[in-house]
Image (tube, rainbow, N blue to C red; front, side, top):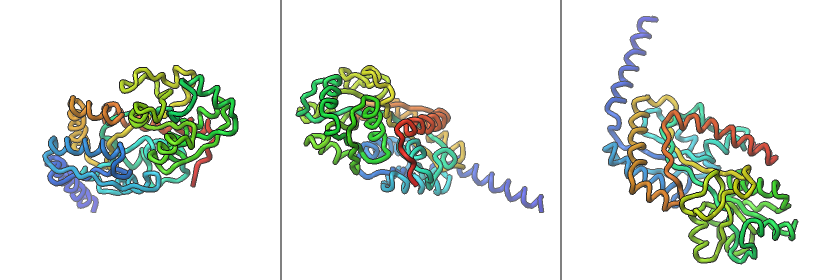
Length: 321
């Protein structure tokens, strides 16, 4: 019996190896756990187009939005580990969710094999164009003078946008009310209209509206100034290093995907991220090319989960069921 079992397992391994050697032999699906039209979707479609040329097979982007990214992410975790279903993972789905929910329908470390990190990006501290403050110190003075009367907005509860705003509210002693929106678009609309006094939004979006005087950009998260806004100081420079909400996107495969398949995808992504046209288009989308290998992305994911748990603990946010 043991002999037959060993032979059977050997046959399975041989079949898997043969299958991996001719990968890909059919279309690949890239799942984005967010709606069409957003920055993650745009980046995914850009990468998918270039992957098609590298792999010689169509790469189909499939949007599976909803439930803080649970639906799309969990679907890939349960997919066949053959390299034909790949996930676009976000900081939100792979690091923030584990820190803010007691139970997840997936484990970002145990259920996935990292392929490669694609980009990272920072959030901008934006205020309405009508705000009398011209810079960050003036903003703090103005908000403190109206203590208890003002509010700040975010992309939604338990998002990096909320936690950045919460940290600034607490550290600066502003006593502001948090207003969670259902995504970035309604937050930006109310920022422009002056319904909330500040919010952390995607830098590229804030910069575009700032050019027309509808918003002012007074700071940016992260440890370094951004090429798209070299004159905007970082929150670290402004004296608030804890106000940090770096976002990122990376590709992941279901756990158990053959190493040869992961290596094929990793090499293709690395080549794509070296393309000057791709890098230019990514910067135009407000994100920074930030390729990292499969191993590096795995280490980075674990480090980000630990970092966000510390951030969430500092804010006093209670993990949700």
